[in-house]
Length: 83
Image 1 (cartoon, rainbow, N blue to C red):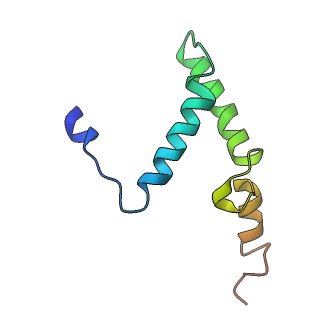
Image 2: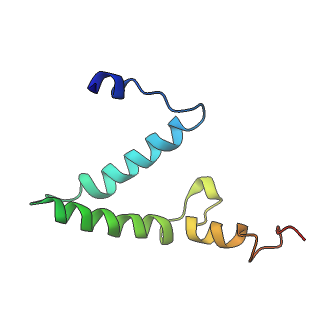
């Protein structure tokens, strides 16, 4: 079972995004803290994810945070909406 999960191949084009996210998560959470229990892991992961989506600019989004990118590209708030 474990071997089959380790051999899973993401659809073309997604592996790079997943690897980048995994690396960012490892550096930002797992490598930065010594956890005593799963509650601490969850708390740090939730805080990091909030920062990742609202505070940290992403090169792949033109230097915007995911929240800023979403606001600019949300059909209800952008000029890209269908008329």
